[in-house]
View (cartoon, rainbow, N blue to C red):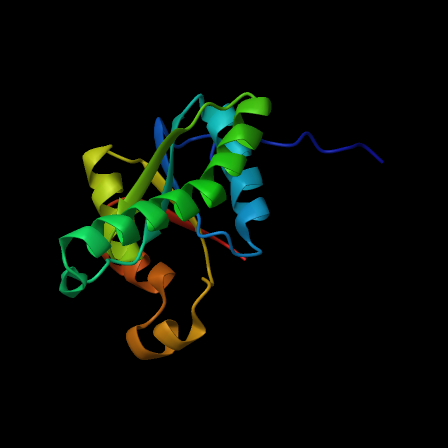
Length: 152
């Protein structure tokens, strides 16, 4: 039996800029793996994005600054390890940590960076928020101006 030659993924699509959204959930490894494969296949620039929830200004200036700094530090704990893994695989992502609702942050980066594709997971870390507001992936799929790949 003759082995069929594997075709490159999305071979007829011009992908030069990819936004990869991660939140540290158990799907992150699969998201990163897919992003590496597509980025290498298309020699695409990758923007690795992690958004954290807005911090209330009601805390006062000093506590607000400390809370934002802590959120940024925690976000980098999530994103930096994955960025390093991508670099080891030959893909050098630009890391973006953003304060704000995740769907809005992902769409903002995609617009600013003229993304040809967004890669993200189907489920995040907060099921209660998802139940009340709808999933981040659903919001992104509905509002994105480029193809969105949902990794399960």
